[in-house]
Amino acid sequence: MGTPKWKIKGITDDFTECGCCGRRGLKRTVALMPLDADGNEDGTAEDVAYYGTSCAAIALGWTQRKVSDAARAAQAQQNQRDAHARRMISLYAPLEFAPIRERARMFYSRNRSLRHTGVKASEEVAKRLAEARATLADTTTGPARASRIEDFRRYRVIFTSDRHIHQVLSVPDDEAKRQEQESAAARRAQQIRGSVLVVAALDADSAHDVAYSYEAAPEWLEQGWKAAHV
Ligand SMILES: [Zn+2]
Image (cartoon, rainbow, N blue to C red; front, side, top):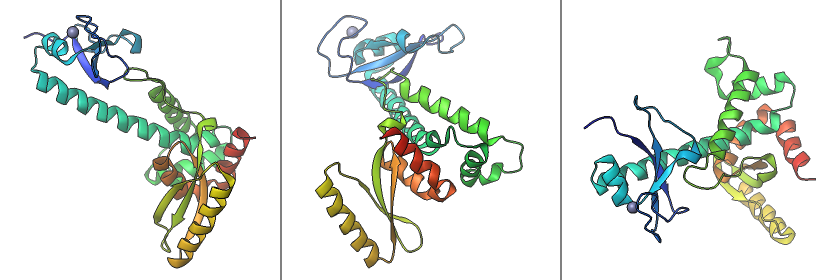
């Protein structure tokens, strides 16, 4: 068998018609990126083909089982890249226009080993933000994901007494429910001798990271949220 012509990028239920045989009403399709003669990806999201599992199996010369397993694994990887991208945006987007020393403090607080190595924090932050935005804008296996500060939500984080995260709660939009949550969180924090912090982030996972890194740039993390939600 020669070099495969496709690479499995993931699995999606957004496309339900097989791009090979035209069969419709499929539960999901496999996203296939064309490869060039050297086996490198040869295209962007627009060039991706969506095949049903059986047609993908024929195109790759694989069993359907192998196609399904590879598609699930590729999708899991994509989901992990998305989660990482949301963390990077939640941490660094509010500091994007902050003074260089603010970005440096945040970056080195999270990457202590890179201190004094000549790695420039401002360049690294810009690079990570650009990568994160590209990741979330990639439409290979579904619509673009939220990636702007305007998309941040509020999370109430309860810390234990030794500054580990005990609980992360999404802050409700409704004022009465919000106050109820605030009181309940304060009571819980008191019981465990912990503390409460409200942060803004793209999702609850990212809120963990923002909460742990909050002290590196509290004003900027707060201002970024406020500027986007006036
Ligand atoms: Zn087909």
